[in-house]
Image (cartoon, rainbow, N blue to C red):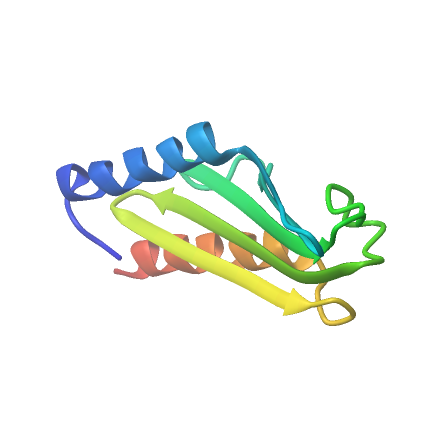
Length: 121
């Protein structure tokens, strides 16, 4: 999305609020467990915010992507502002198809493309 600083500021504030209020949520049912955690995405663009959602069996170790046993679904959501452009990136997959390292790679590539387009613009 692109727009004025004023238009994008509301969206960026919403991204910050999600991180602040949902950065550490755990939901348990009889057979499953879901977690939402802050996703450290590093310094990208003019502002970067990330959240990770993991769902798995009730006793799964969902906090660690290095141990994906028992995990069923993984979703990373990243919002990055580059000037007057806001990038929303979702990376998801089932176990065996999900590589969490690709989230940062995709975000870095998106930022680079927006920066290059701005220079060519």
